[in-house]
Image 1 (cartoon, one colour):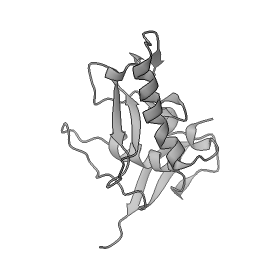
Image 2 (image 1 turned 120 degrees about the horizontal axis):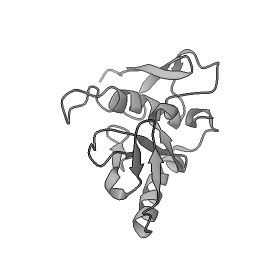
Image 3 (image 1 turned 45 degrees about the horizontal axis):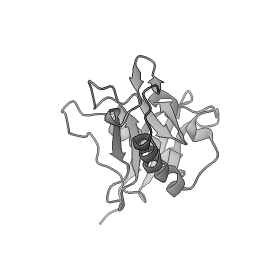
Length: 160
């Protein structure tokens, strides 16, 4: 099972977990915790974790924890969701064969997928510059599912 296939959780619960995790990571000496992506093995330390703001105009900001290799803080190799580290590819997958085509992003996990597609997967070639702006939490959006993977999205901006 992948994060999007797990039972829905309250957005506050899903997004408050990163702060608790960082607090516990700072409080303990964890020199032997590692994350293995498809290509890289990275130590799980506060120096290798970046906080990514999930929504535009969100106060207090909801953050997602991204694990990166020490030599490249812009590369995301793992994401902390549902009390564990996941590979980026796994967060963008589903085991639900009925997820096909454009489907409305209704759960917080589906909103995380839209964020990942717009801010992490589709990065600008210029450092520090995003291809897409952050989406407000209330913005209508859909995820394109093909072959059990989230491959695209679109949003509808309200006039005003």
